[in-house]
Length: 509
Image (cartoon, rainbow, N blue to C red):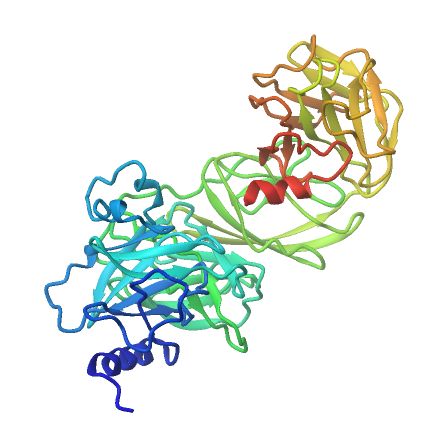
């Protein structure tokens, strides 16, 4: 059967763009019927990049809409909305100032013309198992649905942090997929800035889970947003790897480079900063500038990429304790400067690490009776709480001799704490209850109260921020080793005596 002219034309375009892939007509009916064999009169044809059926598209995707023979069509007429739109909403969908019911559902996107197609490129990943409506002005073009599970590995944009850079080192992407030996020619849309996507966070840097984009020519328009392709296929790979669709912008202002810092007692130089060497980790103190770090170590540490803000400390781990290790440290600053330095360090013998991991300051049950503070031993050996001091705005309390094994948890509670779980989740059976005369001065403040755990000699071990809470919701650390990454649990979902993994997953959903 001979295909209609428009179908032949769009098939050729799809082959030119992607090499192969399905060609699917739009669905004007918004029903669950199979896609029609021919498009309805007047409606354009649509394909996705990467190729996918319209009822199972990946979260990072572009839409290519055939507008052959329609020279006057404006790319800005095309919009993507989350969910399906009623007839009444369609009447307002093309307005510059969307009504409050529609504005939050508009998907941010770059929309541009490419030959006989309009390309709509969302600048954020779409939500799994969610339906979207593609419109041209107030007319439905297609209904699309994101697959429930993403078969693609993903690389997140880690540098520059806000997508703005004046340098030739325009962007760095990192993820869990191994990205060794990558050297792929790609271009940034909509203007087609050419360049290479290469392994590592900088030229010659050996990071195995990061790639960086090196433009062949500088972008001529400062402030104009550019996008990488939605996915790539690494050498030797058989599945696409998606790239976070955050817009990249060549900044027109001069951004400051990084400056070195002076190391204090107990610290040693480390790249552009200083570190305090412990047993299985390094406490990094960066300079007063934003930096991207890549740290490779023999034999254990493979950090790949860590973003640090001005002077805010960060932990690097895991390291083998009581060992001599060699590290290659690379930093990239906001002005595009790359600094590579070696470091030779000796780690300490293994020890316990006590961390304030979760706090319930506003229980559903009576206050302050049902308040608690969870401590975890994040170290490699057992240790005692004896002599440690918990400090709040009202004073401090001395902790008793309670031994926690590696990974062990304990609840710091008042003498009258009720562990029955009558009002709030009960502690995991077997969790030690460290009863003290008081937890905070007259209890922990619901409006937020900073906490600090000190060693017997006064050295800081762990701190916890002041965060205003709601009844029945605890504040938790996303991982014991994170220094400043906290979140609030769902009501009644605190996990006394249990790791925070379930709450972390819920917080990211």
